[in-house]
Image (cartoon, rainbow, N blue to C red):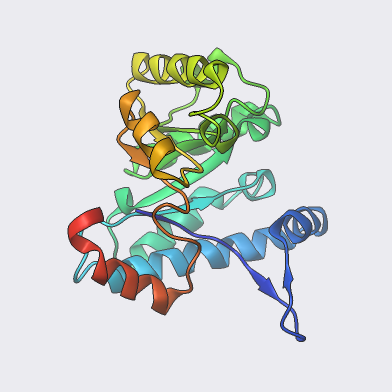
Length: 225
């Protein structure tokens, strides 16, 4: 699988960090238009890639302003139908902090999306207002362990204990687990030893534009698909 990432290059060739422009987009309301475009692009790429990589999925982060749209669920379903992709290939990611804002609206939306076969992931688990009730009430398929616990897994025993607890918690709810921020073989081996077989991070690849990504998965198909 892959995760859709937004990058903003200015006219002078410099990059603006997502940590800067995403909050501005949310504050201004532009995040709704941007979010719709990203989901459409992800579905478009999935259709292109399915000829050679039939099981490839793409995850997309979703923000609270998008959930507040009355037609949010319908828009996603229509986009999937428009590009003729299988719903389970699209994965929507939300963070814990979003769950505190109008949770019933989000529960209703996610339940409808899950019923359509779309995968739902809880992103950056452990860094927000973690609550067991989230795992009980919300229809998640995947729990992603935040990179702050993963990147120093080989150095701090406390991180290992936390990750073990998160894995056990996720498995008790029948959730798949993904480790974020795996950058070295040592950390990858530590993650694997804890029973996590899915991970993302620079050890696989740094962020790539579309053409480079296609070349990458063509070259590494035997290793990653």
